Image 1 (cartoon, rainbow, N blue to C red):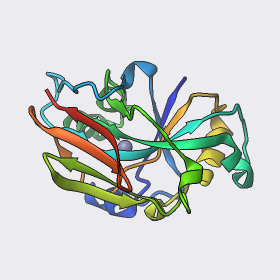
Image 2: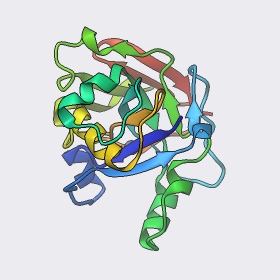
Image 3: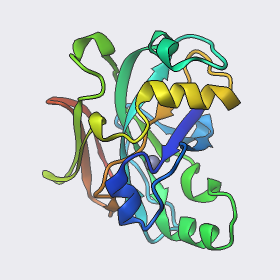
Image 4: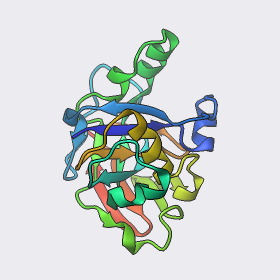
Length: 204
Ligand code: ZN
């Protein structure tokens, strides 16, 4: 399986990092070794001093597809979840300055937090109107609604599958809303899709 991530898919987040609002989706990937599952603790790597949380809605692909038309994209998934795209912002800034790829900042071990269970798409009245949030130590630090996506889920699937064949089990991290910031040892991160708790883990 592969993990496909979307950058700058929410206007307010693109602006908070002084990035342009993109004309087409910003796409990058993480390897399967990036997964952190089952509410296991996240250990801050010793080579970063500015490790940021990015809470993101996740789509799990359940059908193989290439060059998927937007109007058929909904046939390629039945569940969504929630996770964290951990980002070593200090390393990312250094790499971006030099025009280098982001992998060391974005795709390192345990950088892709995955919720233990997914939620059926059918349980939402409108997939592009779903509230989600991240609480740290009981305080909400990021909250968003899928209506704020620049590129909605079906558009993302159409764009991604022009370049990459989607396979069963692939995960799409659909981008983060505003409010990203550093985590520190001892923090407790809890993520919610609407009122349903999706993950709950500690930073060590
Ligand atoms: Zn992200």
